[in-house]
Image (tube, rainbow, N blue to C red; front, side, top):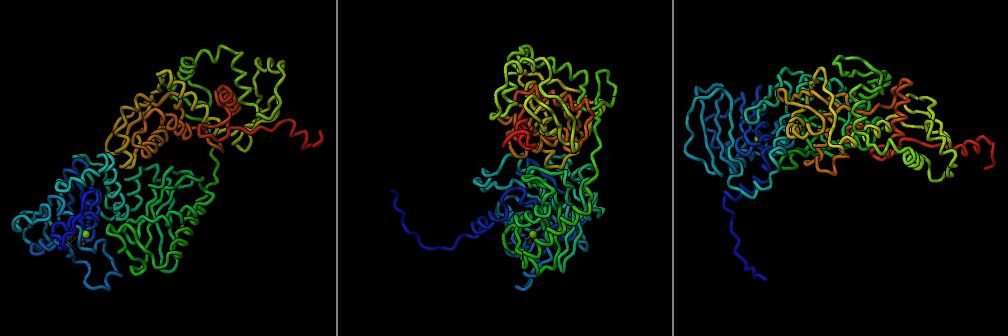
Length: 605
Ligand code: ADP
Ligand code: MG
């Protein structure tokens, strides 16, 4: 054991104090971006330009056209606990600016090489100050500059290697930066935002003040169109923003964004309140897209809870949560989701290259070909083996074993006879042992899943070129993610290429998905990438495919033409595991004849 000798108490050296403090404020490049954007907004900027190099490790530059910092205050601006935003203790309870702690610039300067160039509107010229690892370098110098402020942060954490080690992959750090810029762009539609990564423009809003424009810039026109407006007032609390229609949801809550008085906040209670508002509209485990602005008098909320100011404390939390829940409920009810889904025809490109509408379930020629090609011979050509597997899979353990004569006759004809479709959601079929109710969505998921996995095993996934490449717009964070996987997607039968900032062009889909919506397929992929940074590991493949199949499977509530019903039933019976969907939910419910007879009193209980 090493003996620890007591050392005398001493004050910490000032640079160490600021480094320790900096740790709380500046955790990663995105925290710098956040603080600098907040400063620009507090300076009433109308334009904010963010330039990033190497995911923020090399450079973070934020340029604004706000009211600037006078030359003689530059040295103060970079010192600790200096601010122009609060003066007296009471001010802390009426904060109307984003900053107030007076420590961001000092913290940033203590862990980077910081340059600030600023020029207030009434100054004839700009002035510049430089800080390196907490020490001011040289005097404040005059320099040519446009009105406003430019803050350059170079070599972040150059003097704190431990910090640098804790950074995530560049892709993750970039995504976190995107998320920060995106949030402020949402909250300040009247400000023009531009974000550049390594010289590439990845996000920009027009500053027109129209929130819907920002939604379009960030989510793309199709998603933006599916957002419902929220507007609700209750006493001093005003809630406005957008929430997604019940049919637009995610497997994670990262797209639920909350703002309190223009400040992005994290608050699990707000999230719960929204989910309560969605009660019965959304399945368990699914999360809506939400952009909610909660506004109240500054003294209704304490923002001085945490150094990053991302947590807040409401003076009257119950009232806030109630209001949020009601506002969501009201928006959902105002939107009438009861319009039936009429689509049973999808456009499929046939091999001649013409676009023709064909009913769901009838394969395009190329797909017919591909399934011929990939079906393992043994399964089709050995009729003795196949139905045995089927019967086992299709008959509940409790039902009596079938007579061998019955089994023989089943080999010839179809195993189940289709009766029809009910509630535009279930197929009804008759089997030798009773009635089957089949969930068309779950069944189709299973069918797509097995076809794809079969193709995957053969190492060749037939692809279906789209006659018209589909242009898909993704939110910047998702776009960054997808970019990393374009190569891999090729192996999966996709052909996707980058096509402008945050936009991708889908040229081909795996043939098996050719009837589906290319955007839905891409989003399903990205969803998965988001949850897992190495999504293509072998064991994750099936899960990913399952997810895409779910997204593209025929939905409940779609009435299917007879041929499509037949085809689905047959395809399901051709599956190795016809009884459950890839996620494990049942595809069918069996009602034995026996049960019917008892219910109708034909047989004793
Ligand atoms: P805080 O924002 O909490 O006051 P900061 O360390 O972030 O603390 O900034 C210190 C001071 O520098 C601010 O109070 C403000 O007066 C000034 N300042 C910082 N950035 C800007 C900017 N972009 N435009 C104008 N003034 C700024
Ligand atoms: Mg600040």
